[in-house]
Length: 88
Image (cartoon, rainbow, N blue to C red; front, side):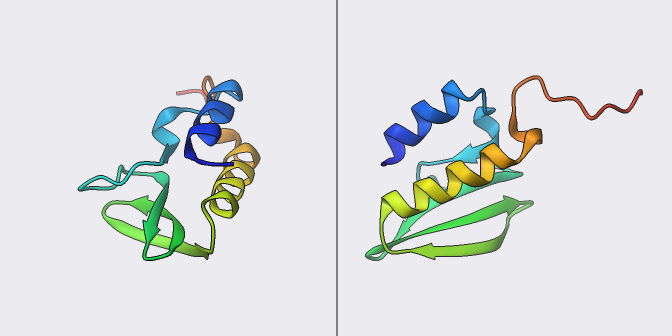
């Protein structure tokens, strides 16, 4: 699996595009799972308020993509239409 395949799968699963970032940019989006190439490997981390937390290193793009897919599908808050259930 590569980033193109992952993006298609996440769209099929109704994952919000704001929940992840698969492209290297000059900045990381807020509250998103990010994928970046570092040297000969890949890194996945959660970006929030300019901080990178929970960094995971992978040898291949495919391993990193499958990790992101599992993480986002396991998180109901990443889905389009998700509501907290609290009345405001």
